[in-house]
Image (cartoon, rainbow, N blue to C red; front, side, top):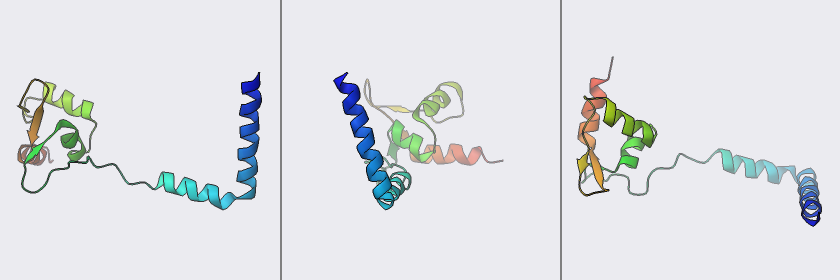
Length: 104
């Protein structure tokens, strides 16, 4: 019962702040909705052509699962380079070539 009262008290306090300072709420909402898309930290530098799967997915503007499905199902999709048991890469140049083949 004490949790319900605490939750209601918090809700009431938040509503009071919203009513008293609507510009603060607007500012917070703007900062949340205007955040740029997340670019992987180690995005490829000009001196490397190798991309991790998450980087390759971001480069192709698709989800990592979609990238995996394409690599499994589409024989024309570039093959991944297996560097270890759990480490693989895609060549950016291969992805660019595959993209150019997809143009209509």
